[in-house]
Length: 372
Length: 175
Image (cartoon, rainbow over the protein chains, first blue to last red):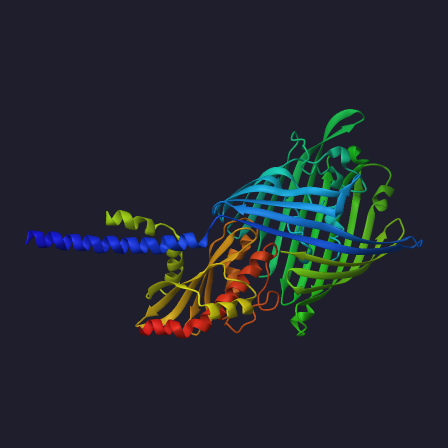
């Protein structure tokens, strides 16, 4: 009897053991099927035809393969990965013409939806286009004027970040190389102050914080604030220029409607270091509609309109008020964006740029872009 | 000893996460899991319809049964995001309309908004014949274009594939 009990116990143990093993094998097989370490190649590029003529009859026409970009990435595990982006601008690099840039190269630790960490060459989270600048993702052959003079896109540098999503808000905090205050100017704002990761001065870091929320399908609303003490010299004395960039952005895309707007302001604590300019300010609005939403024409056919207002010297603490109007411009553009598939775009646009004090320029642009 | 061997299964792995998601919808149902090799003809047709290849070589499927009837199916699949794979679960009614979509694993920063359940609810009621076009049938997400497109194509691919092999699934039930 005792041996029978022992046998039954052994059989039961074996059944439980086998059942346990079977379940464990099934689900461990699932786990390993869904992730394997791997590398990936991606990229984007864009060729532009730019034609312009001003009121005095000065004209130009250029054909330029503006950007050729390759991504290389590798995932070691579900949490640890690497991403890089190398960009060649204007076909080649020679005698100061063209650029070869390492725009991204960072290690990413993705702990969970609520927390991740990155370190390396990063893009700060400013505006809608700096981090998402592939040609099919924005209207216009060229990026918006706002995204050049207020947000110095593409802005990249050495640093680290934390990111995540909590209670419906996506956050990111970046600490990275600061801007070179000696390169700030009334005509180009902070754009020339980017160090681009080249042996960057780490004595005056920049802190960038961003919050976005997506409570309604198709709508993102958010903003960012970046601040630093930009090193500079004034009358032969080393100073720091407290500099900040605050911006708000919103984008809505649903039922064929595309509506985008961004507003930003750069503030300088030491206007004397920027030729008395104490702030730069700008905004733009895009409105487009996908005709493919109502006509069976295949792909996306989006006519769109943009209005921009940018002033890289929006206020001054000096006595010469002309500096404000000298750097103020408005611009309107109409264009067509054709996407036969979502990764390829053909673009054309026409518009007028009106400096407050200066000659009106009429432009016509065509382009082709891709991403993969 | 047997208990110790079972312990790893009780951890938060994909299979358990998937079953929890299914059970949340059908608390009184029993779940029957299978992993099956993909059927070549149906695979090719589904890939052509969705313009996206399968990234896994097996179908991971649950039959959801209640009162001796199949009331739903659930599939677990991968699509490729910006860098990392995205693992998602899609639950179908017995008529193959999408009942629920859930991202089970998102493994990077870019495109993480695709996990938003508010956005995923858009797919509810979608059938294998639906066009699944971003901007028309489905709203996009700013900053998550690649993940959105990948997931939309993945759902189209799985819906078409399931519709093509459903008869055989019923055969399994009868067996």
